[in-house]
Length: 205
Ligand SMILES: [Zn+2]
Image (cartoon, rainbow, N blue to C red):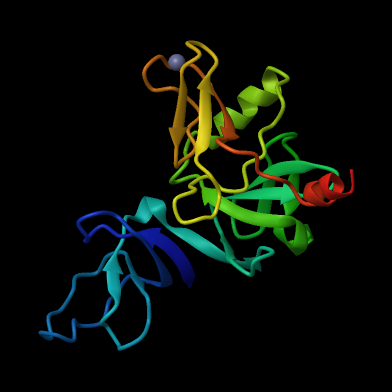
């Protein structure tokens, strides 16, 4: 089974992607046997790229891809974007997506590949749904977030403003709440990020 999970035998947990296995092959360097457990085999030389994983982070591959041809896995957070509207989906299992804004349940196969982009997942961003639901419940505009971690992207830093204490912070990763006071944060970018079609409109204005 193709899957992705966080490693548990590395100094820092890292995402590993490959085949989920429970009976790992021997370690090629010293011929050591490994116990039955939860592993991801990244492939390559047999037994050389096998990582022990935290089972609660296991996300199965849905077989679908987004507009950049990136694989879509369970627990992924997707930005849905057309020239008219934006929305966010979460991947519930290998078949089902849920629209966070209106609660609608959709089949992954019914999503338009061209309109969706994986922006993160609920394991790295456990409070994303809560943050978006807060916007819906308080009738605030849903923020446009084409990336939840901007570190390895061309996007500028996220500008997060606390609705409770008014503090503004720049961050490379999305957070729903200000940890100093517990208030909800509004999310934007330090400099304007244009949506599909928006730049064109501006150029002709
Ligand atoms: Zn605050």
